[in-house]
Length: 242
Ligand code: 4FL
Image (tube, rainbow, N blue to C red; front, side, top):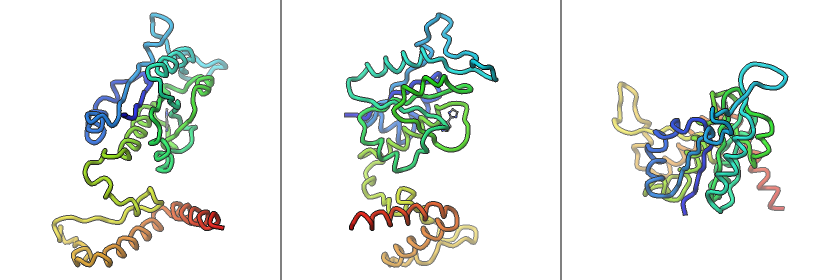
């Protein structure tokens, strides 16, 4: 059965082109995923469609009011009997990592809630089973972060990347705490920039060794924080053996 994403948003139209394109579009056509967009505005209590109001205590901007969001989440939960964690996209959430993405892939359903404007009433947080941030920057809303979650989860579903997806080695990837090694394709010489000789050698062991060295050197130069994380993970594995 398809993994079902429900998205609650004020801007469902922001999702359509990404959801129709490329790997995600194909995963939907092949029924590996199902994405259902719900417009928060349809759950407003008045005919004006009010979803936000001025913050108590003053301050700039408008804040999402709780009633429409509670009604929307309750409605969406009832659309499918399978349990669905409610995921709130917010800069205050836990930072999304590849490990966190792998955890989400195991769920039958996810309800993604997009915040907007200058924030939301604090009581909306009580709806969430999980709060996720995609990085330490402020966006105009949770729509792009919700698409990030859908994209990162979908590419891990069996078959989603096509025939070679099992073969795609993740041993040198951010998934394993390393940056990828550099890749080259034709031509062998492009404007004086030559492809490293070892890649043309046909010596598979030498190529694997070169790539491992490149992945490590590159990670050390650019993201030494990832190497520290790997050392800790290796240390933990060592301890668990005792
Ligand atoms: C959500 C930013 C998740 C980063 C504005 C509203 C955000 C965000 N990760 N910015 N939501």
